[in-house]
Image (cartoon, rainbow, N blue to C red; front, top):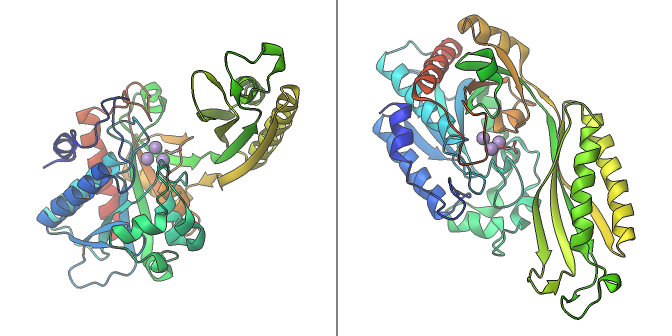
Length: 402
Ligand code: GLV
Ligand code: MN
Ligand code: MN
Ligand code: MN
């Protein structure tokens, strides 16, 4: 089965009838089904599958007489955002399996072991911690903090991990594994129109914008929608509406900055109830980390002023931050030599390769997305472009494993 056929084979798993697209939160029924599918598919191609201490899956194509040292890895994730597309994550996983199978079939003389890795909770859809698995592996996320993370149903990550055969006390940094990695190349659907504009199927990634998540808690006074006069309210929803506009205004002042309120939760959330509180989740990105900080400070000042004007209080806290990433320059250069015509492209999206890049030489390949839409059902990559992506990945992995 090629990557295209593998995507077709999993196309019914985790469909979201309400939102459209796919909802595949980490360790949900859908993601577990995908993990089981990956394990079977990889094993059927003679790859040796293991689960690491943080729940990542590794499918190995060992070198004939080599050890799992100095290894070259590829892969991505199988979890999705709510109502996401079919490609963000799975494309990198199935392309990895396809590439390793082709390398094996051709009997490429491999000096280094190769593996396809599937990282858990890349999107942070369940625990609001993007790249949870890779951050644990590199030692950036305190396992104690990870264990205590709680999902919308009140299930802690420790409980969830234990339910799925992991030892919660064993979560965390995996220095031995990290030291064994010579390079990581993640293939991903492009999440913009760069390749459409450049008229090319595949690009080599240069950088990732610095990005983070902030939580804003607004508190006012819960009350009755029918009996409370309009001039006697402390309605945090009204403050939230103004803050959303202010976020757009502040971001628009800075070239190439991005700021988004993508999630708003009124408490208690009833049509005939003036909310007592609102939780907002904000995502801010820019290529310059200092600019992100400056923008967030400006938004915070606007937030405080708006909340005060509505008789509400506001508390803003940083949930996570990923500094700007520049992918390994030597790897970028080598990949451009190997893939003549492949343009260089930066991205605003976060990836496990971005997390690993601070520790091991990391790189990414992007596959053209005709509409440029991602994190939404319309996300797409054409069959011919996917095939080009797999061929590019084979070329790069063969070179790096030689
Ligand atoms: C993940 O895909 C992100 O960039 O938020
Ligand atoms: Mn994503
Ligand atoms: Mn992704
Ligand atoms: Mn991502």
